[in-house]
Image (cartoon, rainbow, N blue to C red; front, top):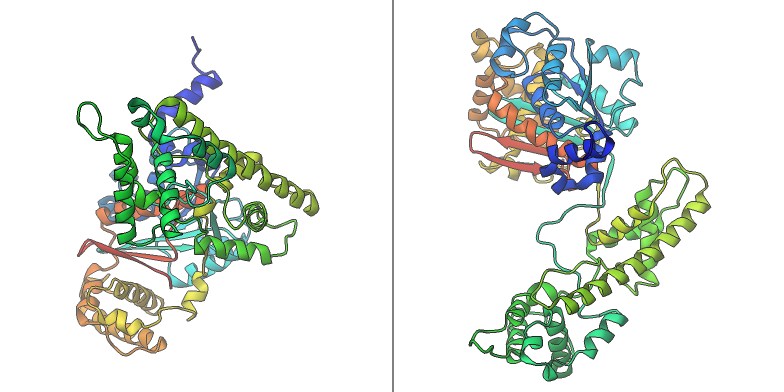
Length: 535
């Protein structure tokens, strides 16, 4: 029996504690999360809700930068302060309560204005994996954006403004190996089977099998055999709906009736799998673009491992792979006898191992040419890269500073804003209230006795912003009135929702799994709708 406190018992306890998330991003993703160091600027309602959703899954360490004191306003919308803490440092109070959620997480508090840090400690943010910023005036945000962009540190700007939620991801380049695509198709290569697979399936004769054996042939064999017949008749695999319908009929012709009168399950599975299993073997256009970029890049000692792996993969595709990516090495579950299923499963696994081994040798050669490196590429890294090669993603971002300087890709912004259902109008409004704050040192509607005056002033800010973008005054007055009605208030339910969403994006960036939003996300709680824009 294991004693409490031993490494194995601690690992077991951790596996139980984080069981649900381990199913999403695995042990390696959890290890990345536990090594992460997150900085939160301002422990507002939105900021603490974001941190809460990072502390609970076990992020390594958090630092809160906040020079504000707890006020009665905070008590009304922030669950991580209480009435007894009024007048105390807000970041310190929030940190104490956040750390109570998970004793595995370390935390520190900095009682200093972020402007002072940017002016006097330019390297302050260097240790952080990711920075989350809330409630920053435009000038401070732009300064922070530049510092983090130059340091290649991801920045998440999170905001709840009345009934509107906003997330902006600033990251220069983000590479994703395990993107976990939805509705992933199996990689069976039936249109161009590798030699040992073809040899094995050719050795099976469905016609001479007895009824029991025939009803337990893996459907991958059934589809292969049927495809050979089809190709003999028509010269090429089925491509459109009509041809696939005829192909299914051809599969059905090979089905036998069982003694109890029921149809063979393996053949029914084969017919259902036609659309997903007979996909032509080709490289997705997005992956092909990545490989072409890797081939054209000149490798240096500072080149990120992803691009070394991509260059080796490109060389595999153009030589050993004969225009195809490495075999993934996994097959779906199917009705079959154990012997045949395991045999086919092993054939795919062995071919995947051979393909990955070729890429590994090339990666090692390239690494030796580059000399000593801080980050080594392991065999497991290569295997994961090859297994997920079909879904590689690279996101190239734009700094917030560039976006605010006018380098904005809104295209037909006028058409977007004329659409009453477009969430882009709230982006314009948020930009306008920031300009309002820069000019008047308060947000529109913050002081109740100035609401009418603020409506006029905000309308001027909106029209000026649109004029800078080459658009006419096409924002309805209803939106301007709504923003003034909010008075920059953080509603806890909105803060909790958008904070949780932002935490998800942070986890994606930290683990390099799943694909984070590309640029800007707007949530409209009025209509319960949201949209993502690349600006």
